[in-house]
View: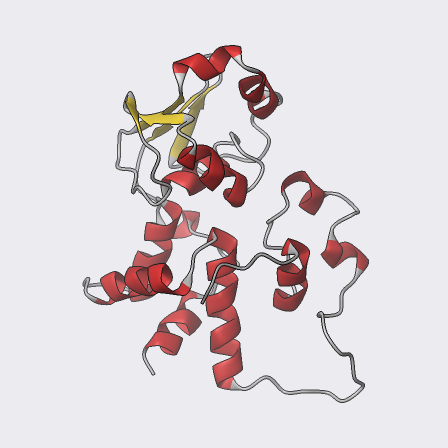
Length: 208
């Protein structure tokens, strides 16, 4: 599966819910879900029943698009989750939540995960004082994510830190607004994982 380069709002309409791919636009009346409730493509009056395979596939694609992953990388995550003891779906979601680009997004340093991934790739963030430009880096308990020191005098820092916190911060993260750093206080608990993704359907898709 190649990386999707089409309209982001089309993915939300296909999923039938907001995936928050466009930053502030997703919270405004301009959101595609608010304006057009129907899925993209040819519209017919015939009611179509989604098969079990279709439901599993859509849930998998929804998780992929939400975190901006391609099939090979997503498959590696689910394979690693299968190899661990416990609930496979929870292991998968916990791994996705601990990605560095996702933590940057949750902290409010970026408007979307896509933007957070680009900022990490460009080397704008340090983990425990060490430059880290790998979006898939897994944060650990006690890690501190901070801006590159030279960025603090640039306009990009002011643009992305003004008005923080922009969204409710998960309990497993804490934000130092004075230093503009984010600390990982714990690993995501079950109740902290995204409730909009049914991990059971994803596990069933890869268990075929």
